[in-house]
Image (cartoon, rainbow, N blue to C red):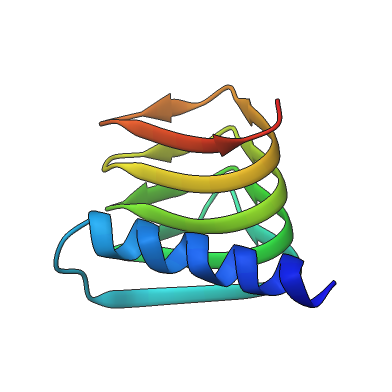
Length: 102
């Protein structure tokens, strides 16, 4: 369990390093993280969740780690994501960088 936490932390740190200079506008963490359909987040969004659901809009980059991710909304920037399962049914503006299972 400890190795798993350290591995996730290291992977997130590598993603942040590779993404260049960033500034945090939003940090979302918890068991279930949701960006609602009527919600717009501007700037880089950092997430660390068990389950991520994006129904709204992210005007910037989405960076983080989660077990399952459902991207049904719109992300205008790059997406850097470590997840076991990813479902991308929304609009991704730039590149998707995904490391995970499915």
